[in-house]
Amino acid sequence: MTAQSTDHEATITTTSLRRAVALAERPSRPSALSTTLTFGWRALLKIKHVPEQLFDVLVSPVIFTLMFTYLFGGALAGSTTAYIQFLLPGILVQTIVIVTVYTGYTLNTDITKGVFDRFRSLPIWRPAPIVGALLGDTVRYSIASVMTIALGLLIGFRPEGGVVGVVLGVLLLLVFAFALSWIFTILGLLLRTPNAVMGVSMMVLMPLTFASNIFVDPSTMPAALQRFVDINPVSHLVTAVRGLMAGQPDAGEIVWVLVASVVLTAVLGPITMHLYRTRH
Amino acid sequence: MSELAVEATGLVKHFTTRKQVTKAVDGIDLQIPTGSVFGLLGPNGAGKTTVVRMLATLLRPDGGSARVLGHDVVSDADAVRGAVGLTGQYASVDEDLTGTENLLMLARLYGFSGVAARQRVEGLLEAFSLSDAGARQVKTYSGGMRRRIDLAASLVLAPRVLFLDEPTTGLDPRSRNQVWDIVRVLVADGATVLLTTQYLEEADQLADRISVIDHGRVIAEGTSTELKQSVGQGAVALRLADAGQRAVAAAVVEKVLGSEPTLPTDPYALTARVPDDGGDAVAALLPALSEAGIAVPEFSLGQPSLDEVFLTLTGKPLPDDAGTETAGDAPRAEEVSR
Image 1 (cartoon, rainbow over the protein chains, first blue to last red):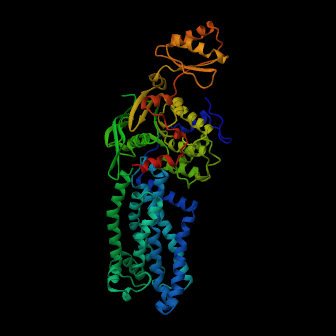
Image 2 (tube, chains in turn red, brown):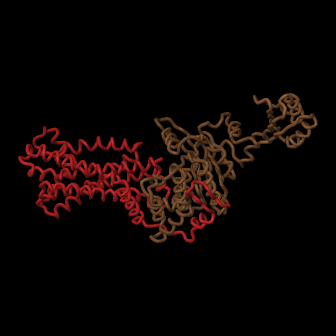
């Protein structure tokens, strides 16, 4: 029997089909690391094929940096040059924190499109698709960080901490972003549509980024707001990153951020995996 | 060892939406012999996809048990995953990646190393006539190409059991025939296929045995022929040369077959049900008509269609729109209703 014909381009023959499907030797099961890296590779391919997703990542920090520096910089800090030293580490944190939302968005898109079930039907280490995606996202965060810092350098950001301070600041930020992403993987698994994930996530993130010490020194804020800013994890992260980049690392805040990252991952990672396993 | 590739006993799955419990699957038994094609036939929302998702380890049953190639789908889920391939609206490829990248990713996830993975992927793309499209993003593919890459994706590990969830929904007839041909080749080579469909013709064409399901329950099971016979022997349809002879012809038919003929609006046409064990009577019909001097240029003996089977079993026809839904809409509607 020959399955000839159909679409002008498509000719499928029994023999070639048999040959292609037949498998002399089944490969052995790949390691957890190897499957995780394969999913990381997928995330990078998506950046390559859908570069638009980087657009959001790059445009918002550019707009925020330029707007705040030139509109408010003089009024807030006396001069734009003085303000950019204060603002840039904060903008960097805001950018990356907001980009973590895409982790949930992407995961939910996979679910909606059915890709997710293909992965779940594979005989692989179960967390691999999610951990791999988070690793891939880290590359996206790095690109966003490099762009933001490059823009800052262009308009007068001169970090006292030098290259080492800046790199350590970015690394600390990436660690926290990885941990924070678990919130959005949970939302991605719980909510029905990718847009719902975006909406809910932004509602959470807007107050966290604005009611913080990213843009201004909180000492002029009303007492109640100050208390919120003080417990806001984003403020701790900003202080830690700022300290590293300014060459005056604040050990207490750095430890706070690292501990928070471990706690977030330890609590939210298993919740994510539970939802992943039981979702229908 | 048992010759059953898939065996399910009393499978149950409930979904709760706003405190309302829907019995998506309400006690389904299946026995699918190795090397056969088994069809799950039913309308939208009958529970077909839910059954497949439980067998493919994507959903945990709320009751009952199932084994695939001897592996329990709950306690030995990983072994099941290593042995089955899944294609359907729920198990898709990534539209943003190219065809080659999709297959390469799966090959690596199944454990093929660099060169072996590439060879495997090239062979599959070529066999599925997708070599030229390999470098293009899947979202640019036509419906038929899309379904072929989905099928190729489920064959990367040469699974011995293949679950095809509505494999031809939304395809044009040519692409549909192509998918059917692929399934036939795989089965000829020893694969076991579980196929869900809303298309009666598809079940009729491909499946060795069919379970008709409705509201999460099996309402009939058997070969396509058995199912049709359960409804009755079928019907004869006559077309006369002279419309004026219809009354006489009707009298002859009633006498020979023992069942009252129906007279369609077409004045030349005449149909009558064949009673059980009516084979001899049918054979006697044409000579009897000829003896009465009635010319019959057209005579046909038809088995009842699966449409009629469904009507008889459930008391309601298959929904007319069964075939027209697009691949994207049907499953989501089902999902929302959970």
